[in-house]
Image (tube, rainbow, N blue to C red):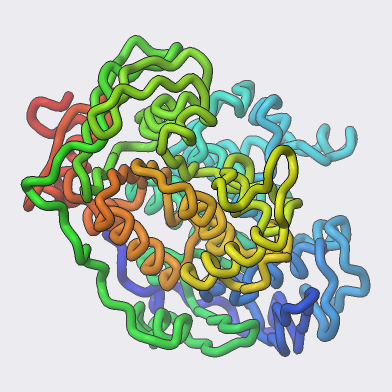
Length: 514
């Protein structure tokens, strides 16, 4: 983000009766005290950041606010009226809108149909102005959309923008935005945050902003509330605090900028090559080689084809082609199972749909890749062995909660990501493909995942990282390839791995990259 100044003087919210009061809220799940005596207020026109590590209780609190969960103790009061029923319908009636980290959309429907989803026939007829307003807001965020376009053809960033606009469109009083800029690049993020500030101030809407990206927090917020271990551990006007202070209050320690401890040796042999990689929906082919101990970053704008390239490597979609070698031997694969057996680990961007079985226990998810020591003979498995190994892997990744018998859906986003990675740590894989490895992960969790990526490389593996977070790409990578329109157009090493150079190439404005 280039906008890093705190909001402090940018039009303070009105003083008076709070728009939202969270009072002494507590919530427990089996073996977990998710929230413990949480209290804070939100004012009309205010943007309040709710910060905290994964597992601090943010998602539980949003669940209570949105009515999908009921508190064990405490109360929620909206615009002076104490809530007497906890249900999504009641929350919507109060004007409480939640834009979730995973957009609640129906891809097969059009933009307009998704905006009107859940409305009665009468409400749909009266909603023309609201739909027009939402489309105008999306356009102001930098994502002009055709109301007749189906969401199957839209990027994740476009879907997030539409979800944000929908939350503000239909008489909202309180809007909660959970990681709203996931998968967006910097120029999109600034436009989205500008629109959020504008809508909050113009309509007197209270906004709860949840993000692990500290520059965004400092740019958009009036105030910050930090949750730690389910309790409010810190609260401050944004103009009276700093990024370092917020992070320290979140994780209980200072976090230094990450630096690779084991950069690749210039004499390291090539471990993995991919030549003539193609997809059935594109005539473009790409080549890639990765040395032992090397981390290759892949940068590019949203929609540039980065994810599609990784999926082609593991044949996640039918009709992909290319010649792969591993340690000098040609490997022939035709499916994700084949790539797994060949020694290629793929950690996808969408962990909930592609990386986890949410209804299964954590230990069963860790065993999904079927490492030989986690399965019995024939069709039989050994849950006792799976639990013991999963607890060991969980400790190495600082998994929270540590109880691997819990279902995957009961973990926070960052800890779900650790589960996805944990699946591959028993396979003895030689190639690791990470697609947005820290999407929705807090600052402490990011440092842990960065350290793990560095360790995987230091063990002599080949590592490829796709990320929309340029500081992440810059700090992790020995070499960076920039993709544009489905094709690698530039390679960057050494001092040439910098934000200006990568953005210029991604946008086609660097010499020779148009």
